[in-house]
Length: 399
Image (cartoon, rainbow, N blue to C red; front, side, top):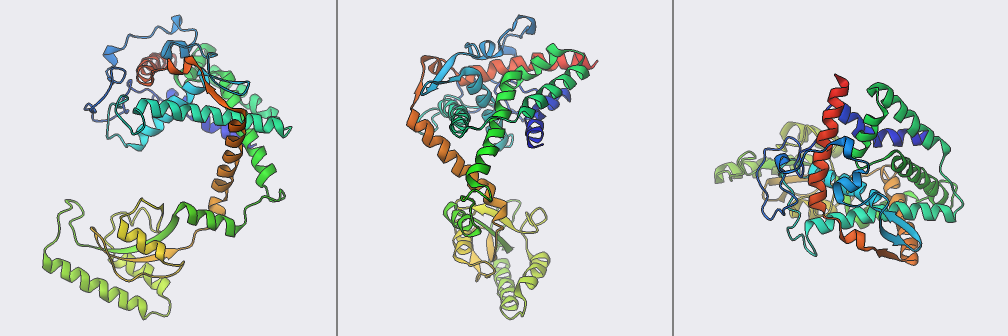
């Protein structure tokens, strides 16, 4: 059942806690080399010793313990529908973890007070968390208008997993604390999974194959073009040392150019240039990412160096470029088709979000005073201390 698969994804963090992988130092990337980021505020020290140890026996509300607000505090309203601190703080935790993961361990401390353009990083992270919480509420309101209700199996799946983990840990209280470590409760976990189920139902109603709104392959391709998403392979003959990024000498660069000219001439004279392209790419390309991307790169505007991107986007599917020079060297590029089926889900997700956003806009969104009381840096630090206490409890339970 779909709801079970979705629940399994959300429960992954809890399984990681069981294996000892979920703990993080406050404000820090787990396993990073350390080093302070400039502009870090007082709430982002990343130093466990500066945060008071947490006695889980004294915690009754994890949101109060980490952000100073009870979980049921109202941080925003969509018309008459309330968005709670518990919902926002779940997304603030999750989005911060994703953000740190995208940095790849390059920083150990988040500069919460640093200017991020239009506000501090903390402001932007908190606003993004609120947007996610509002979107989920919008999905529920949209489903209510359509007369849709969540699959009853969602709550059953949550309770089943909760019971299984309680039996494994020999303590329902420990499992409850494990949920706290992810800014979750059983009720919030059910709500999030039921919202996911409603999302599936809404997508089927609006964009399913029998809905009349099913995106055609042409529509998906037009959307891909609009988003600047494309797929390409290339043969790279580097004119720099790819380890040091130092330029090669003139003689070496001239040899690379001559080799690129020869490869292009072979391709232009081939009866089956597509098949030959793969052969020559595997024989001659110096792209260090080739082994990991033998079928090419799927990327979007702004991700590749400008000469490569401009040349790739100018090609039609199946066309091969002339020699393109970039700071890395000489490229010969093959534009590849994208299977619309691989992106139809992304398009329908965007269209569903547009509907939910339109509904919340019509109803009106208003932040409360409680929203302004949340300090993302201080929350992250205190959450790290809470997670450390939960991890210690889990390890003790595992013996």
